[in-house]
Length: 145
Image 1 (tube, one colour):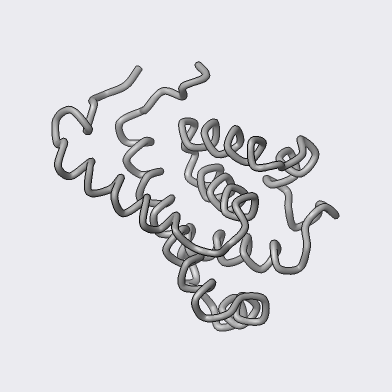
Image 2 (cartoon, rainbow, N blue to C red):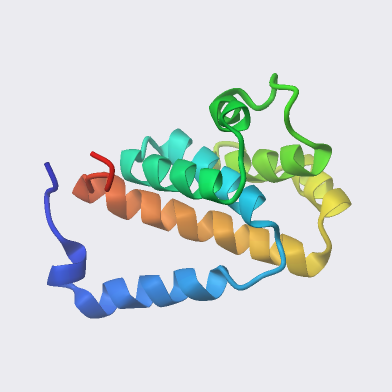
């Protein structure tokens, strides 16, 4: 059960998050990649609302069931390209922040993404982590529940 409706209680703050999310969505990175990144961060953070949303959005963007099921074990799954693996590595590092973001993770991401795309990827990961924290804290219910 949801604890509160932040959009109703703090509409201006919530609208600001929606505007940020919209602007972060304006980049050249492939939609399926972005949805995989959002899905993985949401899995790590235990955000049922965002896992549901981004699995659905990834499917709509053309992702296969096999790849969607493999995101939680992407390190061992053979379905992901080197560039996708670099993005997922950065996602995990930025989401967990246990060891900060090691130079090796950053350099791997730089190998596969130019500066503008890497900046967009950093912002996408940052915003999904913020959404995860809002949704987990307020116990937002998935639309498909």
